[in-house]
Image (cartoon, rainbow, N blue to C red; front, side, top):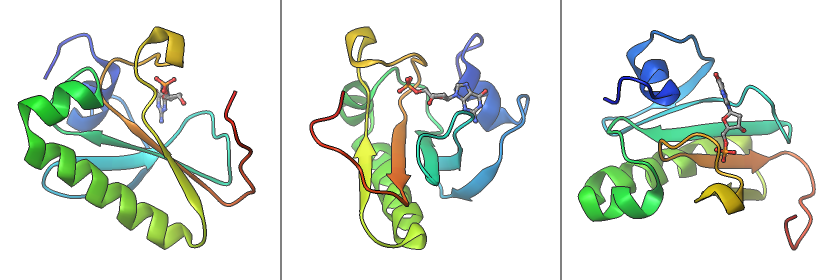
Length: 112
Ligand code: DGP
């Protein structure tokens, strides 16, 4: 846990969130500013700043994130997009690894 990390506070229950699912390694909750009918964030319980750091530090936890993202996407039904914004120029604003699961509408390509 990192003291000044918003998503660590969400995992600890110190900041409220709209829970969707969880497993041993990861927690899924609804994004505050949804960009699609289904917009769920899947975060590892372990604090790592991004997916690259997580997979190097704990590959099992990274797999746990992917498994939970798949479960959330399966429950949403149909097509989906899984996004790890990584680094400021790629629009990462919270530096605790997170996957966006986006579904429920047609999604354009390339992304902006
Ligand atoms: P990113 O830009 O990839 O770092 O995505 C961060 C996401 O986190 C963004 O879509 C908005 C969401 N978010 C920020 N603060 C909160 C919060 O307090 N609660 C929830 N549920 N989502 C948040």
